[in-house]
Image 1: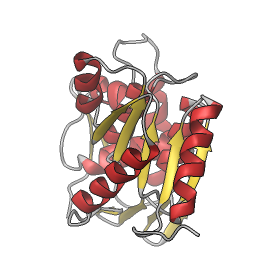
Image 2: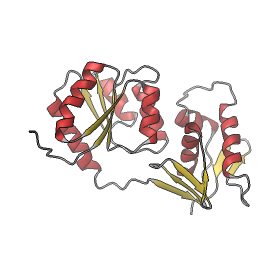
Image 3: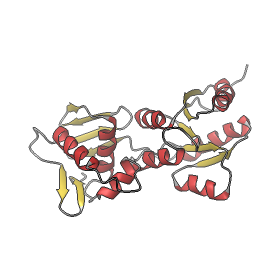
Length: 233
């Protein structure tokens, strides 16, 4: 019987190679960890942003949404869960790209599960002293990142996943003007202008949900510059 030497962790593994995913699961679960496997980037983004995890392990090359883009979106949304890239791309530039995208560590395939386990333990120790801001508050608006709930003046507000990410980004930059380009890059991972009204339409829907029926409008349009969400308390 293998005894867990570290606290049991909830691990999200975003990996499309079934053999690698099973190798990780079989190697880590005997240590007491829970490993959830997601085989594509889009689903991985939703699971990573929608639930509480102790660590996220990400492959670079994923169907639907690549690992770099996925992690950039999570970091842009303020999600600070430790992330480790597990990939066959082992060049220096590849490693730099992974770290610049928000990765906390980078392990190249093929790998030993014992090394992966040791790196996970090191990341958890490194982040143990860092407080994670899981609840954001602006005026009477509250967003719970872990519960994926939004309330204003105690009233529950239902948001779609992209609306939630948009609001979270605005709340993390409360009182600041955020531009359309900033939102496209951080919420949609668009590094080009798609020449659509995707930002404007989402802002309009978000405004109707969190401002309608309340005495004060929190979502403000700053003409010629972008948008601003109230002033942080």
